[in-house]
Amino acid sequence: MRYKYITYQDRQQISARYLNDERVVDIAAALGLSLTSVYRELKRGETGSLDRNQRMAYDPTLAQRRTQENLKRRGKTSK
Image 1 (cartoon, rainbow, N blue to C red):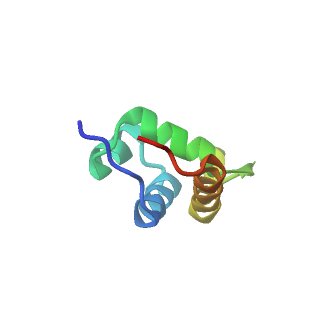
Image 2: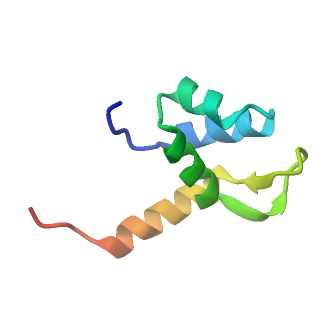
Image 3: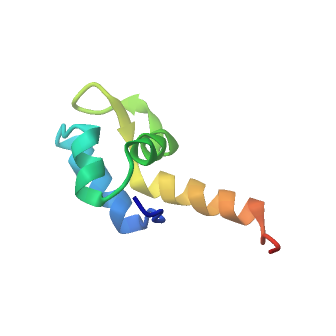
């Protein structure tokens, strides 16, 4: 499987599918991501509360903001 950056649109799809109680395996397959990537993404966007399925709530906007902050803090890499 090739590496792929998760876009904001991907994060919105993850959010919608996760809220519809889809399995993480199915979400990963539908988006062409590894299972680990989806689990890390769900952890990145945790809000600290539970959703209607009694799982940790996921916010795609929060995940996007955290990703952008991490990239800014990391800075440019030299080759």
